[in-house]
Length: 222
Image 1 (cartoon, rainbow, N blue to C red):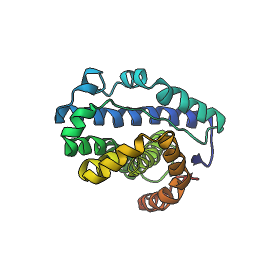
Image 2: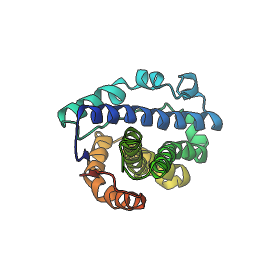
Image 3: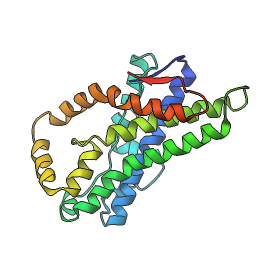
Image 4: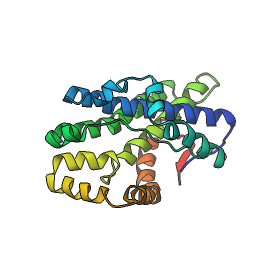
């Protein structure tokens, strides 16, 4: 889904590290807002932390193995991964609006990272010399990947964060999602559907954001 015009080993390493950091921040945001809302489940698991190790211990496949597999199998043009923060379902049932905020915290953290990366790219400016090339390269991946993670997770279908936001705010929708989540293979079907439609959704957004920069980044989705 993520492609660069010129792939190399350095690009693959940057992609993996940026995904690792971005997923860590995403899950730490979930865990922090859950703690602030009264659910200490993730906090007790050590996930209110920017240290990736607690998140890797919880999801070693999604945090490390899957990203490496997709990088190698795609020749460095794709990097997929996932993580999760445990939420007490009883707490979420009794505090649906707080649970909605917890769900929103992950994608919002990715938008913050994307905004920081965008600001860095604007500050560094056009690549007229070799100075700042490494910063531009890393910030570009941060911008691209975190924008993707934010949009992807805001899809309002379980198990994505958007469903937690909508379900926490609208009770009939929450009941519907609870019933759908019990269907065998439903989460996998949702992920396949989202991956199929994602380029159509993210490319117009990426083109707008990329157009705001002083120079266009050589990444695309498809």
